[in-house]
Length: 398
Image (tube, rainbow, N blue to C red):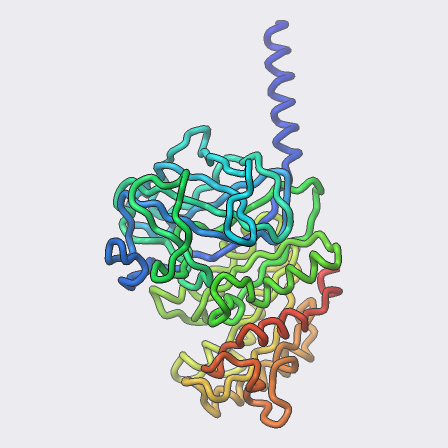
């Protein structure tokens, strides 16, 4: 009887310890379909890996006492073998912070097998982190990965090395690519039971396409910096996919449409309390015939309903001007104006960010200010992304 009582006490203690864990998303890169461009892995010539170590550096938006990583084989046709995984904090100059290197385990083991079509969370790693710190993640893939569940717009260089180089990976190198391979999320353990988490949901403009590699110049990066400077304990998780659309999709590289991926990429983010929505310009530019504003508004209403059903506030951003872009059309511009008018006046969202007003040219309101666009008249440059990040009213997240 005494032994049974001790077992019960131990089980209760373990249950209470688990209940006390409060995990929140701190960084993210939504997985898209397998990538096929040869430039993704010049060491092998395909978007697959075999007896190679892939190393990626990410910037956390929030810190915590421990961390865990989420890897994805969601688009893999076969199980994915993980031979070894290590993490470390890196300083601004890329040097490893002394004493920060850690081995990552999965159910207590140093290796793992991720089933086809599945994600996998690591065990907690005892590595205290601060907001805006950089984390290096090295994955040793001992057998053919059979493709890559990748995020194509990493805006940061990776490194690829032969064999198990997790203990001493080479520095990122130009030519290796700027995508994200298998790594889709980093969570941190928060001391507070409720800590706000913002998921930024959208397309390449939220993904930061054409911003400087390694510069952390996406507008959600700027938002995270402002929240940190204001001493607001928020996390920002970027859940955008370049080329993404609300209603339709162009597989394999642009991911499933927003309505399809919303539950996985937003509602499943640990601790999510708010989501920002900036999406629709690709529907207007890529889809033929051009969808009407009413069709896109119906899609937005679906996202509103699904966010609210989970107690998540949803904040809409107006669609940026895009005259001068390769897929601009007068018909698309007319629908953009209707969409933006509805976003501003319908009061169906929990808040509005007027990116259109912040970045448009007052003399030519169908296009961006020339000094804020990256050259294709669709994507902002670093300065434009900063203007966007600065245009977000932090009171929206109170």
